[in-house]
Length: 239
Image (cartoon, rainbow, N blue to C red):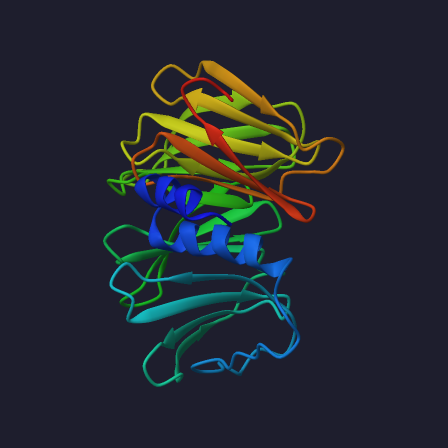
């Protein structure tokens, strides 16, 4: 990957997304003698771990597993702080921006949890969750081809967005004005949150489904991940 390309990407991507792009470009040229070791290994789940998330301050981590549990970890020590039962397979997890709440997605149902006491505050329909940047709203994507906007405060459903197939991921833009959704048929869509209007469709992954998508920190670009490839998009033009 050229220096000029790296410099250009660095202007628009967060360090984590830039690292992802670097790894993708490097993998083709990497040699077998390059070996990395993890800083820490977290053990405790009895089945596959399907989703992980850092707390906003980086001190804690959430993990959701096929063993039907949600675990909170101390990142510094690797110790399990709490294990939450009562789920089916946990497919997704997320922290609220202030770190006070967690969302867990399981069997097309999202649970909003208070981290301090692990009380279940309310449930939302869907399996792919995303908090708005201010923490006041939740987006949920569902297999029933709908994406819903919810109020965290009272659990009210504010708006429904209708997609073309089951949603594989959803997310807010950094300013909270737009939403990004991805689908199993290789399509990515941009929505206006306030009106529910579909603004733009991104296509280019072919027959492979888009598994995940994310905005850049300035909201100008989007990344989409599919089979063996990641694509970078200009949000304004769709290119």
